[in-house]
Image (cartoon, rainbow over all chains, first blue to last red):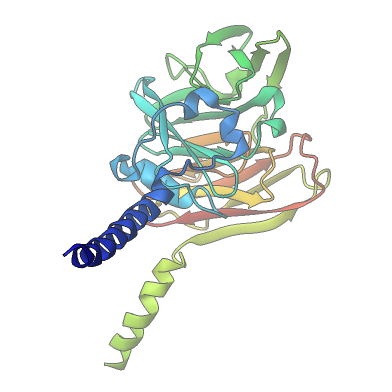
Length: 206
Length: 119
């Protein structure tokens, strides 16, 4: 009686081990931490936020996931919403890492604003800025900043306008359309260690 | 029948490889020689996006625009690094891109692309 029982138990045990191995093997890739590019590590507060699954992103952001990272691709399900309800249109800002080691950002204006930064070492003051305006948006200065950046001010004509830095991003928008692109002269960036940088944004028109 | 077969087998790979994209400018930039490079699409049409990107991706300033008439800008964006892009238009637009050389790029030369597509 006993040998017969062993004959049943041994294959059952092996089967259970095989099933467990299959389950663990399948779960491995999902459970393994995604390796983010170094520029994402320079944005610790932004990437500490929980990721938004790609399927839950707005269409404009999903489209930028396809177009923006060329050459390369967006890392799947690694997008973070780093700001919401900004400016007169209540836009959101998202960031996502790419297979080419960049971090890209999307601002959800009616015409989505997209861009990437390959490394903060390549931008003065470690601020990857952008300036935009359009049919439904007055002059807007926004961007991504590294962990070193404590404060940003926008130089508009001859005055400095301080901007809040939060989750490695900042966003400033003119109150009216009276402010033109030529009025936006630059940024003053201050790091946590006290160093300051003047970033020129006055490029003129061709 | 033959035409149907050709369309059946040719169009899906075309779409998959992004052949509907329209690259309206492609060139090399040599710092100090071409301080400012501009490019326009030839016509006005609905557009999915207007993007500029380059290889390698280092940071000089870039500008992208849409125009609804030859002189009126509907959207403009300047950015520290490439790629930079503006998205979907509402109505026919001409696409524009511009490189603004600021002299901070340590590279000697690089290629850039100005790229747009229709919905």
